Image 1: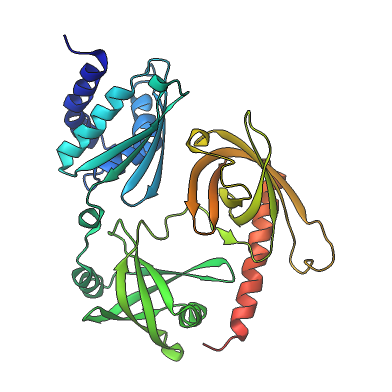
Image 2: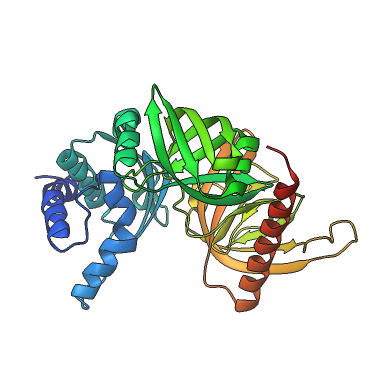
Length: 359
């Protein structure tokens, strides 16, 4: 006899290729995707389309987060505890796409946890991310394809567009449409690039610029660890200290410093490194903080008090401390307006300051 968990894993591995082919036939799976792309899109695209086609179907409670280009985090909640089948499907995707993967499972329902948490990563991330950079730039030049440039100034992200004029020996000459963005690139001496058909983003050093005709010369062009310019909302970094209070269901209140914020979520550095752990991932959380309006930082103004519910998406131990990322749930209109107003104020301040700077 075969143990139930082994049988479930074998079954999941066996049915994975058929699921991919069915997904492609129904338009749920992009033919250019790989194993991690499918895992990332399970709750966002695949399950919603399946339930749309079959209203009687009850989609499993699986939540995913693309931590980086070569790693996806998965949280699986089920009274059936069929996590072995999930592991089998993951291995089946690995077989189908010929992309060797590793699975770590720090917590599991079969070890008395309320969920299974899996981290799925490519064994050879460099192979997975390989892109022929000269060919891509030559393609963009010959087809006159628009490329996007991303920079940050005073914690505010800005996006510009332009075209590739020439490429040779890992050095590109590009023309950027917005004079302010050219100035930003010159000051930061670096830029990030997104091309239409590249899943991964690129970064490059800015050697020099010619502001009068929008030219910039880039070199040291490298792949980034993930996509560029794919965030749904502009995320603004804090330029002053903003305290934040957080409460995860069933745990004492946690404190920290707000790192950045958007209308979709935030990042914060925790005061205590061990305040949260893997068990907190995807759990409900309530965050509260004050955003100071422009021009009031030295007048004792308490600013706009924001209190929002969300979910814990990611917890990482970095050199600057333990960083938590939170995805906001649907928020009251007043809170949304406060955050949007703060972001617009920061953009206005950054642009005004940038116009006075010499590149």
